[in-house]
Length: 298
Image 1 (tube, rainbow, N blue to C red):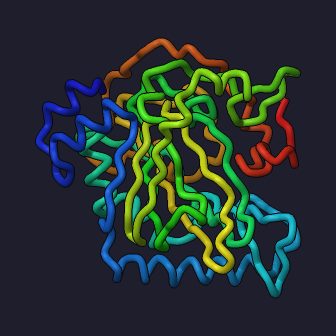
Image 2 (cartoon, rainbow, N blue to C red):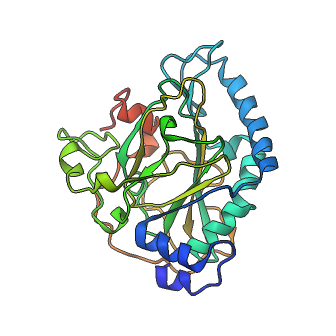
């Protein structure tokens, strides 16, 4: 759907000026949105996942581990597709205030794409270099967004999510290196086109929400806090008339499931002017391992 058609619908949660700001700047940040009791339920399940991961020595399709992860001191980078492993996460994705927010910014018919939980563990949780989401999973148009929920209070030391305002109106950047290998971030040369000094960092309380457009340039610094991790639960949605044109890097049984409204009988087509990603059907690790050069995709 186009921004104009989406804005013509009455919003459920967001004020009209917040919706307009999202389309103008490519992001919106909302402090103190998720109820404390909901956060506690999510954390109970997250702690179960952490306990399970402590038995692993290497990453798998479910858990992405930091190199120094151990049984006694687990250090997770990511829980991939929590919706596929824990019913609570799926219920939260398709029937909560974040689904209402997605509807306010995507229109009444919404399709699910994927979810992930990035932990950014304390004392060195890895940076995520500047990148855009769209080159990882291009769609037939730009009506795609990701909603993140801070599960802990987040300050400057903890690697808050940073976005470059209005970058969604610019080019789709190359996420390959000079040798034609997929690295999943924007090169130093191309970063010169970005207004990095005006980056906005989402600092806020547990239960705050970040929303960013699929073309918005974003990233985060390492977590240097001595004892507090920065878990960020992320869910990606699209308008129902917006279809992926490549394989989902982390497919699940909920891939392309309609979670609001109804399927579209038409596809909204816009030119995609970026390079296609690698063939993810051959396997995908994570943005962390790719950017840290643990694995380079051809």
